[in-house]
Length: 315
Ligand code: RIB
Ligand code: CA
Image 1 (tube, rainbow, N blue to C red):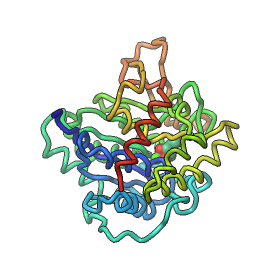
Image 2 (spheres, rainbow, N blue to C red; image 1 turned 60 degrees about the vertical axis):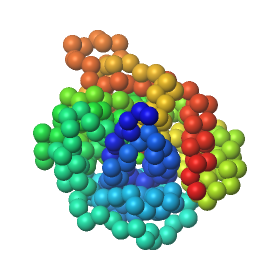
Image 3 (spheres, rainbow, N blue to C red; image 1 turned 90 degrees about the horizontal axis):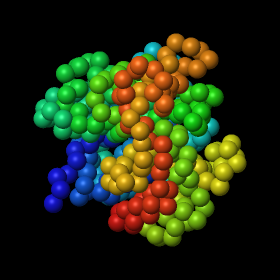
Image 4 (spheres, rainbow, N blue to C red; image 1 turned 135 degrees about the vertical axis):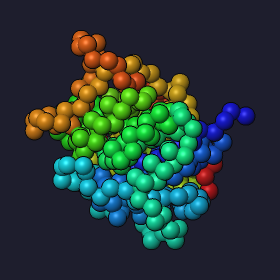
């Protein structure tokens, strides 16, 4: 039996974060979810932390520890995305006040404490949101770095261009200073940017196949995706919305679904025109050291097969 991978999932639910949470909790043989940390992003913190708990209860896992983290980016004012995700952040799902408690410890302290207690090269961080919590942990306690096995994050854009500005993807745009800290941390990073997430579109047949599972989880995922997809279907004129965040968990479960290239990625933090841009040196034209496995290709059918099968195993 292969050893379970211990992970901390840092998120801003958000419908796609919600599906990432469900996929992670549907893989108890492979993943040991040490905790879920919420951060302000798609919607303010009080909703992202509530939504994370709603999803844990929906998955039948109220024992999962959920922590609230940073309510604001390191330097910039908070920019939220209700225009995509709705006022509640997970519109399309049944919204309720969760019974399971929010942990009293701040998410950043949980991350630091958990990593400092761990062996070197042992914990995988999975951020699917602005990187404020993760960067704050590095800034609070730089000694966490060697404890991290890998950071598998959703964020950034290169060939696809940005989804907030022509050059910046939301998670990086909201907190570019935090992203600069994380991309410069020196630990192995796998980045799922828009270049790959825009290949895994939640088309109506794929969303219907999930809904047809007939469970409460499946009905909520179908409702969330039908709500979430409308914005990008209209904006890009495509037949489905990109299912960004679950790409991180799918990579952990079935890395062969994805192809990447080790390249240098830096983050623009100064220019008002391009702030939050991930400058991806895909062709190695600079002397900058590669620091990221930049994922550029996905097997979309394989991704949805994995997701649908795993969701069928949740209540
Ligand atoms: O740009 C897509 C990312 O921004 C996803 O993580 C989505 O949830 C939003 O946070
Ligand atoms: Ca997210």
